[in-house]
Image 1 (tube, rainbow, N blue to C red):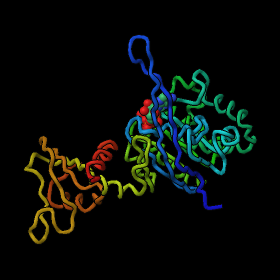
Image 2 (image 1 turned 135 degrees about the horizontal axis):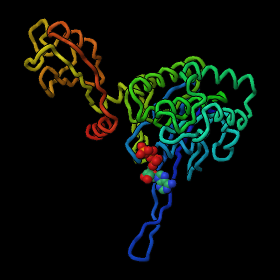
Image 3 (image 1 turned 90 degrees about the horizontal axis):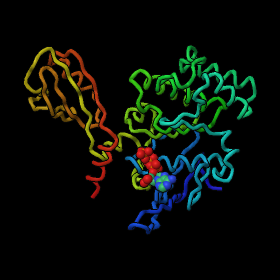
Image 4 (image 1 turned 120 degrees about the horizontal axis):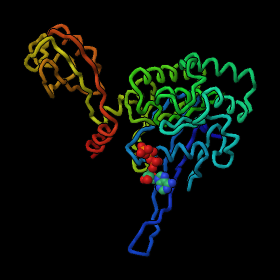
Length: 332
Ligand SMILES: Nc1ncnc2c1ncn2[C@@H]1O[C@H](COP(=O)(O)OP(=O)(O)OP(=O)(O)O)[C@@H](O)[C@H]1O
């Protein structure tokens, strides 16, 4: 048999039939092609970003990968299993986290939700204890175990949900917007945990997100889907190049100064092999400078720090919608 990949999709489709009102009493049937012939392979141990605008078909794909939805066409396998035919068997090998919903019991303390999962998945006692201890330590859950889920903050609940998805040692983890609504500290904790999980256990991760920083920090590969079709499959740097997108340096200077200009040794502005820099806004001592997203910020930061009285600086990623919109603009 040809190498099937750990996750493999061949021409997968999902068509929903919806009824639309067409007049006072009449209703018309109407098809929504949520996933329209998608093919890809994901190898064991890969961390892949699955991104696209609202309504692109991301959640529908993930639901097919878990077996919740049956494809209307094509072939789909996860660890050799056809998800919709053997959903229960597959459930023991996958973990799922939906950022907008919880799989935990709302009125129960975290610990009791985990106990229920221990029984539901028939996890051997020792393995359960080891996995729980590890998640509690790495996700900083010790003080939260006796707290009812409804009293947890969004970030705490998300960490609780990630632990719940991992108690049975899944080989693959689907994460649908795992950092949505989280503050910077919680986002960093979740990302660090996922990195360690992937490095130590070789867990395969498929991640949907609207936050490009998630992708940048976690995924060597990104797939872009729109209108149910795969538009791009490659590195994030490559995506920035295709989309000609820009990142933004937000620079705080000691005082208000004219727009920053970096002159290279030969006297040319923004030259000397450095990425082009464009001042887009000046507000008092703060300046916003755009530069190509695929370029490294390090040489620019070094030059600004050498030539200007720098107080603080941050780098902002373009949002996914903007990158995809530019990708269309640049496609002939
Ligand atoms: N059960 C359903 N019945 C009818 N149409 C549906 C159903 N589920 C999804 N759709 C439609 O399928 C398309 C893809 O939806 P999907 O939820 O997969 O998108 P998404 O990429 O996850 O979007 P978002 O980023 O907003 O979560 C949308 O047009 C949506 O309205």
